[in-house]
Image (cartoon, rainbow, N blue to C red; front, side, top):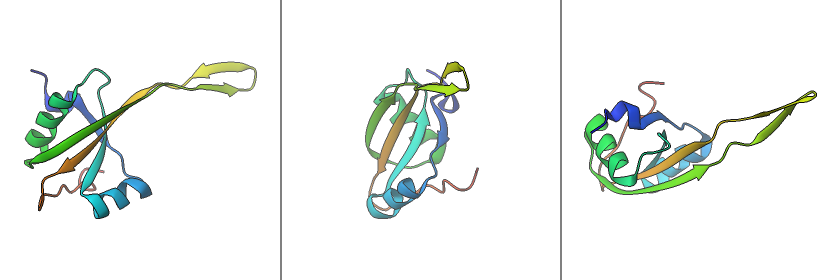
Length: 96
């Protein structure tokens, strides 16, 4: 079993993710590309000592970007939206 810090890369702190925390109790994280929902659930529960209700994931492919004459590719990533059980919360701004 992998270390939870290898699975959860970083939290996503944006205006939309903050609204999701307030409205739905759902937190957004960038996770390892090869992590599955079960691994993500266990990692979040172990890192933050909370109970996870559900996990949704989305893969984002890297996009081609141009800088002058040269073309480059931005890296892809995997995002997980983790909904916590009723009454649970995570302080995502603590480590940022």
